[in-house]
Length: 113
Image 1 (tube, helix red, strand yellow):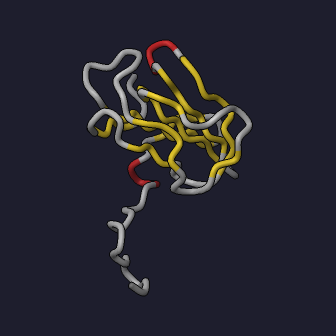
Image 2 (cartoon, one colour; image 1 turned 180 degrees about the vertical axis):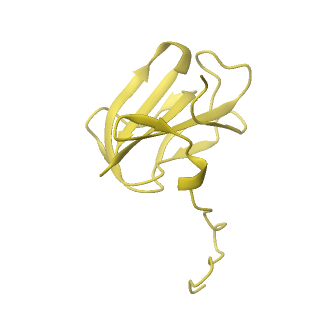
């Protein structure tokens, strides 16, 4: 089964942490290629197929911090970010848990610009 979502992006585009957390894995992982796993308060996020990693195991990261660069390592047919979400040890569809991030310089609903 293919868990997670694939987000097409040009190679080298920055990959940002979905939430603040701690790096529990940063390295090569077979089909995932260059992989980062972040542990957050009640969940984990996975970032796969990166071209380079900018964090190390046990490093603390902030929400939105650049942690890697998009790539096509491992079992990937094109440049993209493979993103997974794990809650209580189970992989789940990340889409219902994601919120849209406003474009730089533009406020989202209910925010001041």
